[in-house]
Every structure is written in structure tokens, then in C-alpha cells.
Image 1 (spheres, helix red, strand yellow):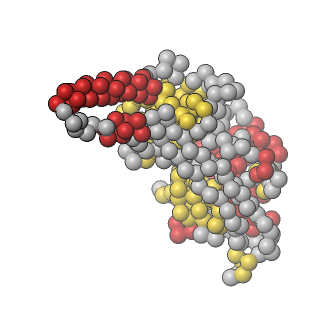
Image 2 (tube, one colour):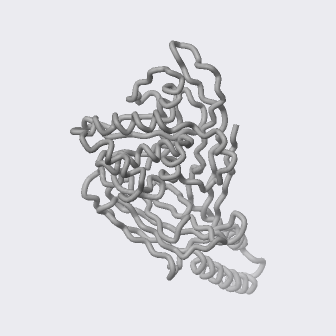
Image 3 (cartoon, one colour):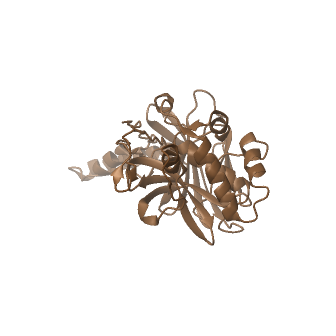
Amino acid sequence: MFLASIHRYRTEANITKVVDAKLQGLPRFLRNGSQLPKEKWKFFFPAPKANLSQGRDAKLQGLWASLRQPATEGEMIMHAYRTLNRLALTVILLLGMTLGVHADATTTVDTAQGVVRVSYPITADTVIKVMVAMGSQSYTYDLLKPTEAFPLQFGDGSYKISLYQRVQGTQYRLLTQSTVLVDLPDDFVPFLGSSQILNWTPDMVSIGKAKAMTINAKTDAEKVQLVYGYVTAKIKYDYAKISKLKSTYVPSIEDTYATNLGICYDYSALFGSMLRSVGVPAKLIKGYKNDIPEYHAWNQVYLDKKWVYIDTTYDAAFKAAGVKANMLKTDAEFRVAKYY
């Protein structure tokens, strides 16, 4: 059992709060109504469930509570004057800390690729969080490189992009925040390009392999079958990897391809990136499968004018045990938490 670190991210004004999910339990693989030999498979996905919400600063609450009627008219006037001065100063300080635009932080929307590119000169001691939000939906990421791309998976509309910097411990301050109106060329753009989690470039060895193996494929269905067959046959589950991972871990498809080892996050990143590189829309999904009680990662692929579920980690286990598995899964088998 692996318990992911529980993180709470707050600005100095107590603006944000994040609670991570608890990862525990072992998956059950079913065969003809009974379990396969009980191998203790451990699946790990480090990304926390981040929901940032507006809060109230304790100092402001205290100031409002202190606005009570003094004993005399003179005391009332003096009390109100002092209180308003204190309140104005506090608001000015809070606005300066949380609403200022940071000169070193930039965000650029690339609608052609379906991403927002975020840049900030991070160092070894700098911890930056990026929040991409639309309405009630919001995903939070770690900025791990000076410039990274994050998907605009919520589609067309108004996005709010926020950058937070850790001050100390679990305290964060808002560096900058911008609102952008996004109009994508089509709904599939965010699921064809490269972003932080499904990070690929045409010159990667793994992408070269995907293009080579599908060069004669005439349909998307043929491409999917070929890439699925490769990933489920070649990649083995890496049991030793979990204990070495940090909570900020994101996959490297080149490492997975080179070592032929990975966890569910790696399987789904490699499979999804390979498909995207050959023109097949693919999502990486986080959530739960009905017979795997742990937090899990798999893919959703656009085939025959609909999105279908494919779980290469799950099926690789069956293949290794000599058991046939159906590539296409049913909606009832999954509960989606997030998608990329």
C-alpha cells in the first residue's frame, strides 16, 4: 500500500487549499469468475486532486468582528477611524501580495496546439503551482521546467490561469492571474498535441517507433491495434519504481520505451503519446476501475466517431498470464476523476 503525500497549498491570505487523495489497496484481476494468482500489483499515480477555493483571511475576519459599538460617541468615532485605517492597510497589503502581475511570469495560449504555455524562471529552490480553471473545473500542476505546456481540455470558453509560488512550508502566494478567451479549431486539438503529461516530440525514438509500425495502416483502428499490441507486449510493470518516486512525478515516454518498464501512469502516457503522434486523438485518464480499488491511470481513444476506454496496464497483466483480454472496455468499468 502506498499513501501519497497530502499537500495543502495556501496563499498568505489563506486563499487556497488542496487535499490529496489517499491511494491504497490492491487490484483484483478476474478470470472466468475467479481471481488470477494473487500478485500484489501496486499502481501509483502521484498527481493530487487539487481544488482551489476562495477563503477569508483571519485578520480580516478579526477586523470585521471588531466593528462593535463603543461606549461613547467620541470613542465610536475614534474606534471607527482606527479600524478603517487598519482595514484599508490590510486590504492594500493583501492586494499587493496576491493580485499583482509578476514581471517574470508569462502565459501564452496556443489554440492551434490546444495548450497554454506557462513560463517562469524556476530554480532548484523555487516551487511553482499552475492552476488552469474554467468555471467550477480546475486542475493544478507543478511547473517543473522554466516553460511547460498545459492542456485546454475543457474546450472553448473563458479560462483563468494562475501561478502560485511557495513562500515557506505549505504557504503559497499568488504571482499572477490572467483570464483568456479560448476558441479552439476543433474539439480534438487538446488531445492530439504535446503537453506536460503526454509530452512528445517528432524526433523522439518512441515516436519514431510509433510512426514506423503504423506506416502501412489505412485506418485509425489499425493504428490503435498496432500500438496497443506493442505496448501490452513490450512494457512490463515496474514494481520497484514506486518507492523511488516523488509526488511531482510525471512520465517520460522515452524512459519507458528504453527500459520497457513502467507503472500505469507510464503505460498510459506512452500509449497516448504514440497515438497522438500518428493522428489518433487520445486522452490520459485518472480515476478508478471497478476491480482496482487504487487510484489508476488509463486511456480514452477516439475510434469510429466515439470515445472508447483502453487500459494497457490492465491488459498487459492478462497477456503476461496468457489470458486473452478485450481491448475495448465498457463505460461501467471506470469512474473518471480527471482527464488530460
